Image 1: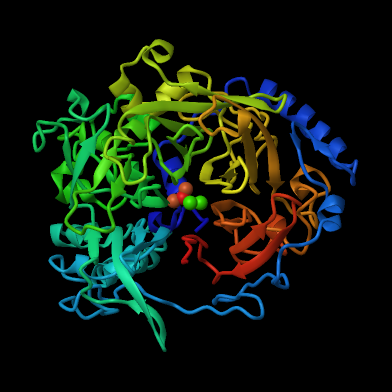
Image 2: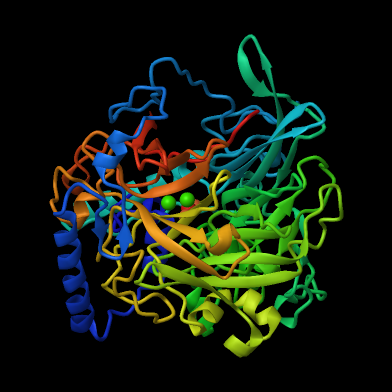
Length: 614
Ligand code: FEO
Ligand code: CA
Ligand code: CA
């Protein structure tokens, strides 16, 4: 996934973004490095204190001594790293696949084939691939899972097209070799027909399906009335402050209130009233222009919307052609609410929660009954957000507008371990309520939000008032500004330049009230490699050669308050990542700081999608 010169299909989403919209180098680079170096020196010195309640840079971290002194709550032996192609769990635990790409959700699903693409008219009858966020719901005695299908691997989904492209590349290479020339740049695998685009549009999105247990374990209940696919072509309502705004109107939808599809569904969330929240992340990558001279407005650049979409949608579906439908990208990048109990319910995009590269949505009820939703914007140097409803949640009451009518805040962290949620208001941003929800990144920049090291999942501790955000990594920290030009010199919760390990920031809302504007914060863990580095890149004191990892991403707190951490990072097990092995799931005890490895995934995979059954 790392060689950005070979084939665009091999790029991660953020590598692809970088290729489409290269960022300018920081103009005052020397000054940034000076600041960063002095802080790095401070961190290194603080680390050298070793045991005791070490204060590291701007965040307090539990020392390994205090972690060991406290009784461990983990009833399993920590797992060693793995570098193989399977799943491992500790002794006494087991694992099994439950559903795979291509498995039928309905009995009329097409037969799966390794050599032929699924037909366009039936591609939404099967389970998709690239699963990410997932939640399990208990509905009237039925176990119903909702899971995201974030993106597609074209070499798997379009085998016939792959054969054509491979043959063309081989022919071009052979012709060049015959002339004694260097092989030309390979052409990328992309859909080559409207039908192929429709197939992959129907493979992505969300799957909702019932599962049941038999002597063979858990499996899908084929044809259950709960089963449903929500794809890039499903009709979805648009609600909240941006609904009906001129910026959301298109020729196909002059009302600005109906859209087809929820796209690039990454992390997930669940509401207290039992609905599923699916979070649109790298939506920008689906748009392109058939007119190469199309001048992109500034906001397209901020959001990474380029002239060439990743899957050639713009060539075969004019809705994704920004030269024809420049408002269509403004209708994506939201959180979409889905009712898993009603397969006929129209999903709803909740614009009140803002438009950015949504990772997940962590909901919690404030003491006064208001609904609080924490959300990260996963891009280098983007922000951490919070929504607070104006109304209160009443179990069994009307919840239909709780995610439409509320306030949107962005986090500002201070180096003195305090912070504040800054409300995005028309007064503070000089933007209307609708514009704040559509151009949320620009609104947040205007109020001086803290640039973060790629906010991935947020989790909320159910037994004490604490929130956590996995800041997965940020190779641009201290190197270049974010796409809006905001400074990315090291700051409180993001203390390392060119941060390739990541960290988890924790905040404690004032008065134990998630609805409060004020908080204290610290760093729960700084990932690192203590066998390679003896400075801040070695990680915090609760990281050791036996539990080290990089790039925390998925994260959930269980009902006992333990924090489960899933990784999506470098798994080549070399250099800075030597000894870290494949991506993994660890469990941390926020009370002691102790972290143990519980699961390792197959090489090449991200570990994600943790959910709980009763
Ligand atoms: Fe789809 Fe930020 O992970
Ligand atoms: Ca993620
Ligand atoms: Ca990730």
